Image (cartoon, rainbow, N blue to C red; front, side, top):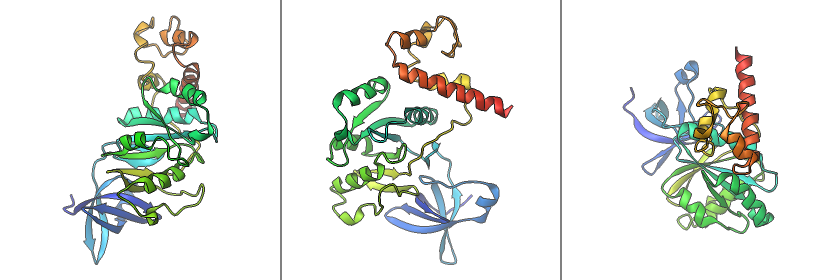
Length: 290
């Protein structure tokens, strides 16, 4: 085991890793054995750094508290799942990220960006499906609305921005950095154009750390059996005791309390239908792997 200095990976560009700790920031390489063994290093990893021939080398990756595969980050407290009116919210993607968060013990927060483009009823309808089990925040990067609520989710935590492309994550990051009174310098803004984020990077904001990540349009849930999916739907769990069968998957079983709640409007029907879609996707993936 390495006796090197413990630092955090804050950025990865090609084969160059930026690591930070105790007010110091270094560029580092990884040992060849990482590539040969298939071991990966991601932003958020706590690593041991040693100096060799004047170069900083990542000698060891410490155990991760948690991780997400997309975005590929580790050791985070919350995932800010960003959606917007334009492009239309991909709620299948959002639901998959939420499931991954619950699997990994990460707090999901739904962030509706560009709220100036939508009316309150539209935002309220979306939030009604998620607010019973997770926090929902409406913000505007353009008008800097909702930043006090956003600050509450960032202070003292390490959070990542996640979600589909073009929902304004980089614009939101720019606005947050400008609003951070500790920063006070426009030079700290992210120097990127529209839709050009290509990697993950950690920025210190509001006494917390924010990972700015690239957008994506697809996400596959891995290592999850179809009959395990229901355990990661926090809005289904209070209803499950009312099902006829203890092991009810809330799909084809009779006298299912979850199906009944969705039909009666007591559970958001759209979210239930997306659950069925994800369940069937997992079932098909499992069938292919046999």
